[in-house]
Length: 297
Image (cartoon, rainbow, N blue to C red; front, top):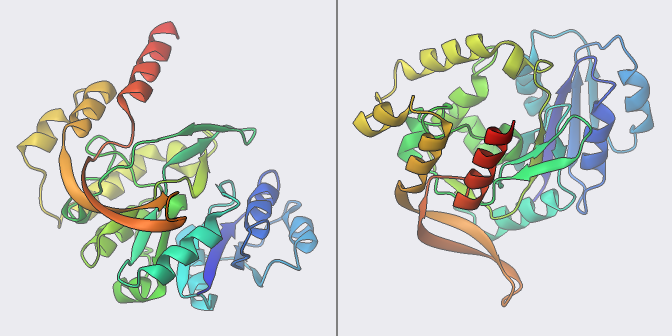
């Protein structure tokens, strides 16, 4: 099976090379689709250096990131799809692991890795180590929206082309929360299956990313998506605004039986398990360390 990785970029010459390196350096090279919105900085010179690993390059004005992603997905030829923002990275083993899992388990429609984070200089600074459960109904009802169950990490998502085609891709009515909307529609069809390793990492650049610069608009769009979804029950509403620490503790005690993919060192293979796990992606130890650092700051 082939993995197609799409990257949409605009004037990202300071960071896009690290993203391209992470894709071109895969142990099993994926198809790389690069949609550039007619950058005016040094991006085109960087693309030229990677011309042997960029399978499709389009550089022209577009109507924003999500329009570019929809356009690029039509050009992709892989049976497995994902998109990677031009400041995030894939782990070196990602394409190999992802294709192996989808080949072995044809009923799995979409997967995600352990949420992982980079700082501004590209150092890996956090991996949320708990193999969480992702209740299908909770995703479909919009509970993965910050204060409820946290966010789903877009850069760690991989799915079958058939799933993308069934939901019709991204809804470009949304300028910031189209990925959130996409997950709710994916979850109406199939459960999200987590993999017990990091597959990608999100670069945290507070104030320099749309997700932080336009946070209020993102929240408004999320609320708009949720207007037509099932309202949250008493449990979610009660703990939603009780602070980050209490929110995480409550997630630890919300248990759900669900599937996951782990590596069996005995069998030397990726194995599927079906177990009862919490919806929290952080451990008590991680939460305690975070609490101590907050007190000291």
